[in-house]
Image (cartoon, rainbow, N blue to C red; front, top):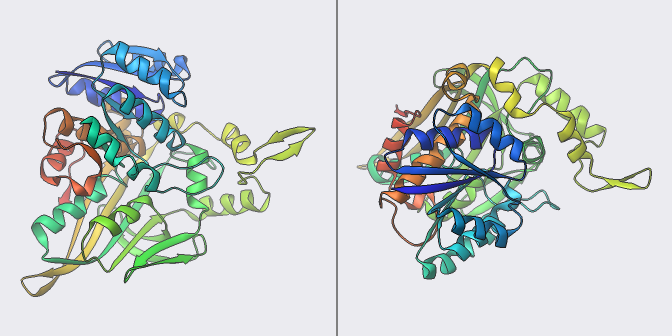
Length: 389
């Protein structure tokens, strides 16, 4: 039996706590910690079994390490902001416990997210005899496992991977983001980037689009973006020639986003307001709806897939591995919408892999470096069934 410490009490943290409780045969204790204790209290009041809660600043690695030791946790699931990945990893190293996150490190001052600094912890985690699993959400996470499964079972050689992500849901708000507004808008407004023939190619933000037939949803227009799993797949998926990531956005969403950009409200550098420095995007975050508040009224479903082409037995083949997730069903089960659900469930599946020894190797790893078979089975059992066509 093990005890898990969940850092972050937002919508994803809520899903993680619910799913850990569903695996009480492995996790006999759950501690939820956040800078805002009231968020922990609200989640604790919703779950069916008692959990511990604590107040902690995830940027303060020594204090977090002390909490890990005092709570006798064996694992930390990082459901906080990607800016805090490194400090939480430092705390795990200090306390000697496993680490899982769902999004790679991003510097607060520059709209850039990358694995380089987290990969730099590999030797330290290996020497300590503990494991860090990076990007164990849906995309990244499940999509990486789909690629690993395809490499293991479906292809002799993978040539191209197109990761396609469609949220075909409606929350009834004029404009809102499905996860932390600051992180979401930084991601969407960044230049596009894709990998082909050993090189990275950069495009203007949302300047390229294509139509895809999303399983369970239908034909939708998706836009080329850069997403973190491309970086790790380019490194750990041998011989792949091209990697791209595509996401759908409604015309309404794009209109609002363009206006916000034109007004300067997506800027991440401080501007002077009456003698006080104000970061426009942080102000915008405070004005936009809390993503957790969208869940109750959300309808529709998500469709996230890996469209993979390659060769098996000398014959060219194409497969699509995918999941559909219903917003209303997620809310009924755990009180969160499907975006949070599809992020939180894989993190708990990864935690199960660590605590049952199926991913028992010290160091820092991305999901595609680990055995996909038991992970995909566990994620299915926890509520994210996947399909192959």
